[in-house]
Image 1 (cartoon, rainbow, N blue to C red):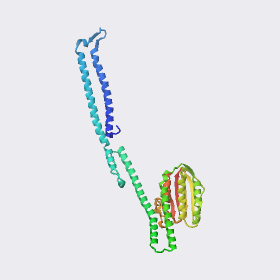
Image 2 (tube, rainbow, N blue to C red):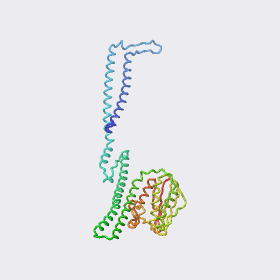
Image 3 (tube, rainbow, N blue to C red):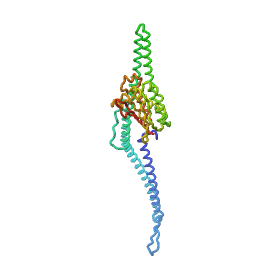
Image 4 (cartoon, one colour):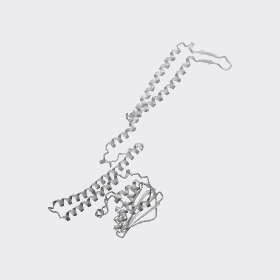
Length: 373
């Protein structure tokens, strides 16, 4: 039964129900009719008008062939009932087969359209039937899923292309430096040192990119069940970045305020670390990075404000995409892989939250990191 097509299963199940109903009805009618007919043979008619003597008539005595005629009538009735039942079942099955075919036709069309979908044509949505039933709802839901997949594939392709570019650039620089060195007959010691320094810098850049990529691919496998105090976590981050801030001559300030939540201590540490590190990198000497935490209803707000160079308004959203840099040359010089803020957004979304730029100008930028409590 499980291996049969849905149309056959619907028809057979309906036929079984119809057959059971017809047989029960036929049995009831046959028994009632036969009992009524048999009563005629033994029936005694009593004529008893009020005040008169009762008279009894025995039809078996009056009509000797009555029993044989009744048996023939009963047999004929049973045969007719059986044929009528079979005819009703067959006609019902044919009707159900026809209705099932019409009802399942949109599903067949839906399946045929799905067979044509490939990774290259995810943007081609399925035709939604005008029936306004479950099939149209299924098609609409499937189209929404296709749209999400199309966006995901587009982001993945762009991410792969950007990752390849980020990995290829340092390798190209290393190869060029080595080719130049090999073409020289007797390179000086200083040239060797310069080449080695360049190779070391590019290797470090490659290492940062690969490390960031590995972090992004393993986010969803990390459990998010730790009880976290954002104040304590931020305090730890500022302590770890104190040396970097001192070298940049940037002051780190943490305002009073706390919010406790459940999540991954490791991931949230990385998110806050990236936000603060970014604020230090793109700050001015003598500038400041201020972190403020507060609870707003069922949401924890963590604001990171710097006094840096600011971010153009048109870049407020795209800076959270992988490998996006506002100033590419400056970011490379600072050793950025272009994945720090993308990692922050991924961590926020894994916790059901978000991150965005609240405001930015030539006097600084303010980021808002939101997490449900």
